[in-house]
Length: 440
Image (cartoon, rainbow, N blue to C red; front, side, top):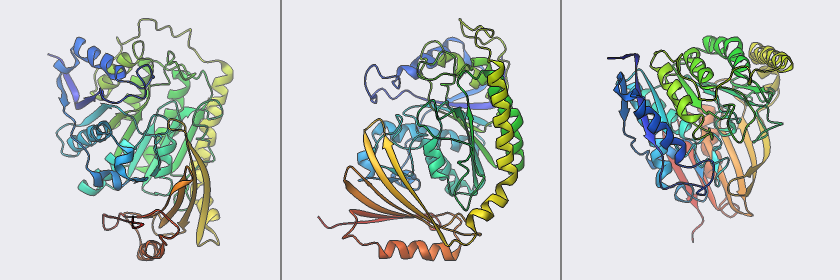
């Protein structure tokens, strides 16, 4: 009998009751073909690869991460509770040492969901990885976490949630935002003033192949992870870098994804995008599972795989090498850049216009962070969308110093309900979620 080197847990949740439309790329068939492949190849017959059933996340699990507008029930369906719950189930299994590694093959996905949520962006309503991470931080005392997002689209929602968190390293490898949704993820997006350099963006040109993606993993991602020394590595395992994906322009393969996983050694992987439902996903997911389990994946190839056909050009190679060098420069200089940005400031404001492409919502957001040398800083967000649902939200970080804690509480207490429809407090130091709203 075959035996896994690393005991690996899997959770499947295709979400039969949730779809944007019957023919939309993000639909349940994405996982049904993978389930079929896993069963047909006998992967679950391998000793040490086990299937777990997803639990649901709680309301508080979600509210540790998100300000849902007008409320949580307007944003989430049952499938969202189960999808995030599948990621939580895998994380608990890893933390409890039931398995060594785990892969949540679930939908709906989540990495385009910001801290404030007015609706769906990029097929995402809530950020299932962030909900999972903040749960294990509360339940197991985990502090330093690295997220490596390998989806072809920039993980802008995860970036937003962890923009000000010095204890979370967020790395996104993606197709250049000038050529693909959501149009962000450039090297100069480095994190907020209290966490400069803890956001690392690696934008790659269209037609990058496994040669280029694995180059940046070896030359940038692994050295940065080695220095950061995370307690947990989470892979946002999007698979739309595949050469056959219908909505992207990259040339990765199942073999490449398996090798990436072997190099990265994630403790937890969570499925994100990937829309070549028959030609890519079953093979890519099988490769990731085998690599996580420490097993041979050399025989795993797509029926139409031709490495010569998808080989990257010399121009792309030079571009990728240049990006790797720039990324390492940002990482090397992060402390001095942070000091320069914070110098002379008590607060720093960021104004943004955010478009929810799935739900056609325009959000105006004004964010203020307290500059702090001791913690991530108290944060407040003034947000409105559709000309209504005007909210004021206060976030106090888990490891908040006393000064930031007091300022966050003061912001919440002073917020005027004559101006806002609802006021939220996310007090992570006390793990208390509070809100107040206008009397009907």
